[in-house]
Amino acid sequence: MVTRQIVVGADDAAASRAAVDWAAHEARRRRVLLRIVHTFDWDWREQTAGADDARRRAEAVAVAAFDRAREIAPGIIIETDTVIGPAVPRLLEASHDAELLVVGNRGRGGFIGLLLGSVSRRVASHALCPVVVVRGRPDIPGGPIAAGVDHTPTADLVLQTAFTAASEQACPVVVVRAYAPVVPLTTMPVPPRVAILPEQDDAERARLEARLAPWRAKYPELEVDEVISQGSAAAALVEVSRSARLVVIGSRGRSPISGGLLGSTGLQLLHHAECPVHIARQVR
Image 1: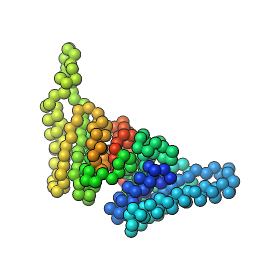
Image 2: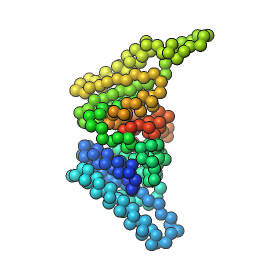
Image 3: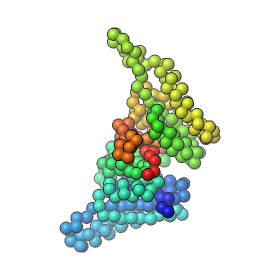
Image 4: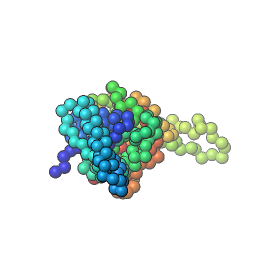
């Protein structure tokens, strides 16, 4: 039987240290093993001494991450794994046995707090388990957990993830539904303010209420707020992320291939959110 574990990708960048902090807290909360994975490239054509130096540097990074996690969450079980090879395939391989994969938003040498690094983007898109990209402010006390939903089947997985986490952390839930308003047919130019019809908001809110009804019933102790936004889902979620402790979104598609990809909303959120982002995905 595979031991329940959270995997976190670690290097010596500040964004990685934030990811280790977040993963350690989460491992303690879930009472699962924390596996710290550090990857390093080594050209087999290099001399043995060069490989030994690379291995020592890699092990030093892993030890530093171990010590930090131990300080953040005393008492959790921690394993470290230093592996040779590119980061993306090694982390994707580690996602096979993980219930959650955690990465920072930038790799070594990136500008902290700004755009998403290529490793984080590719891991978030293709991992075989849920992924948390730690960015923005990871420690907003009292902040809600936000869930971005649409009217596809993946919305229930997003809601399940958000409501479960909110129940365990005793915090509110904010559910965000953004949609593009239907512009009435006319031969005359229509100013944008005329195209926005209040009854469309009412219809979307009713549909959202129907979707939330079973979750409200299952978690009656939770405070649940709704945000209906006309326009960009990414913009609405980024706005909510300013006061949230976590934003939960879904991955796009249903097949084993397309199901691992992220739509434009998810990618924009991963670039600009001001708190960690959780990509909900069925564990395969």
